[in-house]
Image 1 (cartoon, helix red, strand yellow):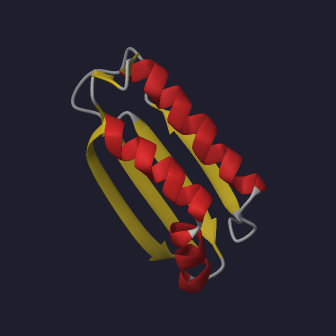
Image 2 (cartoon, rainbow, N blue to C red):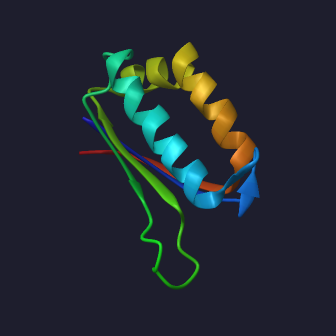
Image 3 (cartoon, one colour):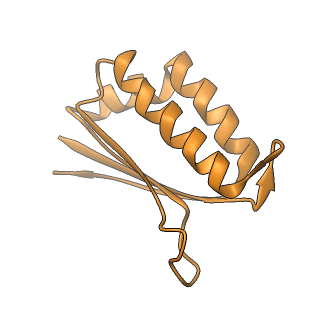
Length: 101
């Protein structure tokens, strides 16, 4: 199994919405991918607590795949690319790691 973790920092305002609004949009759109990409074995998307202090990231994607090949299918899937295009418009930073479970 492959664990795929991605963290996003979001702009305070982007695409006519606040950071909090965009975080929820990202959460909804990423979670919807489970219905269209069968290679996703597990997916959880969380939004940083509004009162959390410091330089935290705003959204975390925690997902699992059977193999790197399945992760690649997910990464190249048109539905994922569509979500990624939106995220690219509203994020200021991204960090990711893929590792074996």
